[in-house]
Length: 440
Image 1 (cartoon, rainbow, N blue to C red):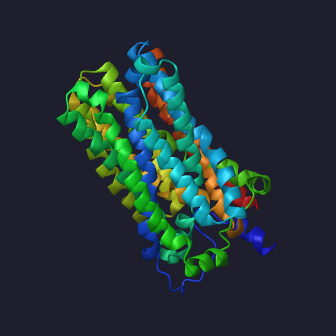
Image 2: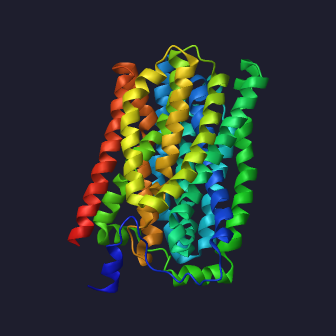
Image 3: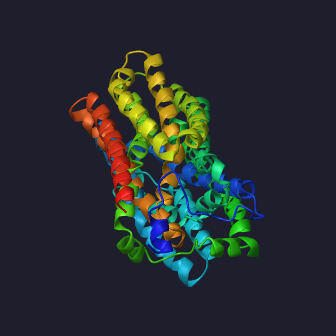
């Protein structure tokens, strides 16, 4: 078997051998990685929260609240459809120009689209043009998100000591918890300090402005690494170079397919404890939106702790075992989701959020690197990006829309069944992955 073929059989618990004597420490890579992830998730969570509290009423006022929120969630899904397209476009920019050009273009498109939403007129002002513009800029967010992949998380994992790779694999995912905390915290402040009229008129727009400052800071933090000679050389040594997307999929169809299914439980859970419960609480309960945002903020803190715990567990029982444990716990949680979220008490819904975030963190912490580790180094840069795009599209892109439609048509229990299906698929993918690696 060739060296490339041997690397291709690398399991979820291992990564290709690297030179751990390298001078560049993982800690030097970690900060810009977390900053980059935080800015990206902040953009998306600001949109996600507004998709519940604002957009149904400003852009779809002719529909009843449930139908308006479903339409808002349909637009929400456009970014996940656009993300793979963005990867293809910006991978071409990377190959033909530079990684810095790709990163600058993608992040300016992402934060530019986010800021543009802050200036959008309402349906009452321009009619049907308002939701069309919302859809256009949401699609732009997705294109930018797809191009924002810089390879630093893979470089971080490969540069870490072998016995600490589980810990460093979870570091990029801390950006998800931090991004949600920032977005949720800003909406929490504005809904608490402003009356409804002022919030709907201008208060909701302010968090979209903040995206510019946060993205600029993150951009410079990442560019300091991407463009310096030592890191350019390190990227070359690790063979983390852009390949053609079609070539990557054609030569690694099983890695892409299985890699996209492994994090399905985590990515389905992602929006079922963040965006969807906020819509449920505002549409079907008397739970005050500001109070529920407080519960979500608390949940994000717990989720961050769960992400860190995933790194500890992955080093003790292996990444595959850790992901399997998390999927089983999510499957168990799916049977309690409806009773907790549908509870008549605030404490029941808060318990749903806090426990859900804990399990999300435990699962999400290792999900991304489980995708990347399936590719040998020469295809890892592109393979990780493309497979992650597909996983997010399948697992998370339509989750709020499907969950709200299911509970509105059939009852809240079906949201639990939906979550259970994601956990089952993850466990099946983990088992099938082991079979493939044994055969190969």
